[in-house]
Length: 598
Image 1 (cartoon, rainbow, N blue to C red):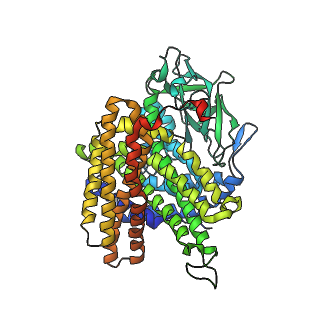
Image 2 (cartoon, one colour; image 1 turned 180 degrees about the vertical axis):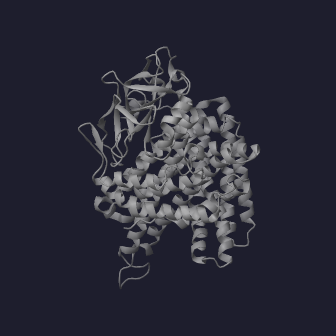
Image 3 (cartoon, rainbow, N blue to C red; image 1 turned 45 degrees about the horizontal axis):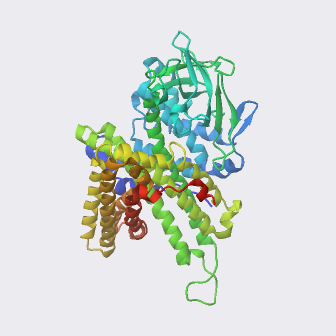
């Protein structure tokens, strides 16, 4: 199977589903042109297809290794990363004053999409650096920026997030890593961190670790966490590299998937000589962490999009090649490609429509991110910020949950061969599975949605979004085309169901937060289903116009057909989920563990 970056689909969803044109309309990027966007996407495709994609299978079979205290990446990674840096891909969306190219973050998200489809193990290291750069831009001193920022923006040095410890997973209040001031602006760091992605590797000369730790007089809990810049190699005042810091990878985790991505156990100060500098204010480390985490959560959602795309392309290629059985009603003659069997097409349509919907949600999230920071007028920025915050947990959780669905279906399309590693279908499921767990589990994303995002503003952002879905549905219902009108009807039903769930949650949470917590996961799923249908419907409307004008009718009619399939399959599911949401805590009546295990 030869993977190809779906440039045309990416551009269609950018322009016609996710609202990329809003950046130009708002005046956010006045020098951005269609030709420039097309050229960037084309080059993304060339790099990912020609350089990164061939590494995917090798990364699974010959993953990262720890040898004599040094992490060696999959053969080919170091050379591919050098081309990534040389091509300027790391600096794409960072501000020009920081050494970046000043392009929209939405284009960087499209790059993350393509990179993860090409090779998720390779791509993940680049996104960690992005998060670290954003934290440094947000909180660093001028001196720190001078030392670290330019080389991290260009990708010459990479960055990490060091949050988790053996006893402190999602609950960071239990962090024990210590930071002792030594009197010259430096801090001596001691402790151990686990699950550190690309905590060590052989692709760059330096790695800049951002580490959560506690000062000696820090208050208990999350209020007493600070963040520190701890380089693998100390940086001299002139920017040259100095002595090696006392930080090392002492173990690589053996994982279910992502074998090419080194997941490190990091030890700080084994010899009492690990030094770092404070990033931002004392005991305010969570602020910086959330800067990184919010960037990472969207990127993880896009990881789901990328791996789902790769799984779909593999399954489609197999379905067109594999001959088994005969067409319905035919009892003799040649066997047909399994694509001709309705149930196989149903699985493939599910894979494709879910991938498109996930891509549209994540791209729309990125557009909102750009508008919130670059739109000239305050009203647009404020509205975009509210949408960005609303969509972030949905992008992360819904897209990665659906990636697990898509990659599992990919195995099913292959039948027995899907269970055999030789075909490569299983790798996608193994790689995708982690995305629902790290950077805040999907349950935590659901709690964030019904807590901070929904209750934080009294449901204002959610209700505004639902009203936009309602308006789109009414517009489609009035269409002369029967299929568009049908999509509109399904979308309206989903919007009404989502509004009912939203109002119930807002009311129930006032009485008992247990109701909100119990309903969080089905609510996020319902919201994601409705949002995906909304963006696909928006795209279907544009596709109908293009088809009528004779612009590649086959392609655009397929977009409409997929939106209709999604509407009948996943918008109807959204309607049904209201019962799961409104059951609230009653659905989780206490069952004693000894009874559960009987």
